Length: 109
Figure 1: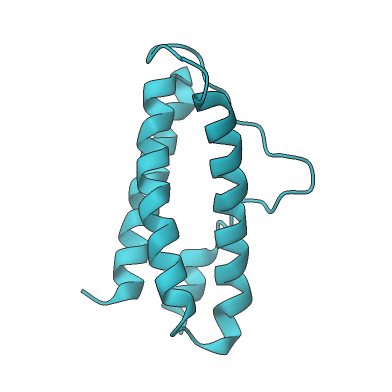
Figure 2: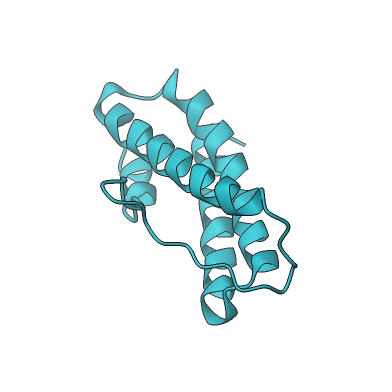
């Protein structure tokens, strides 16, 4: 499977996990997102070495978005949290928003 397709599949997995998370916002649901996002991050770093120059900035922005997300997640996860405890994400001030059009950009190459 080519790298772009792996990235797309993991983004779809993360998006599905997020859709399930939105209703109850529990820690165990956030863990699903975290798991998928770790895989996306690794794939994006690998992709950044070989991708076309025209998408490199978008790849870096997605990586930065995930790093901000991981930092927020880890800050709260360092405390002992019950799996069914509420866990709400809020985008950090000046952090890069989720690149919702990233799949379209990869597909258009």
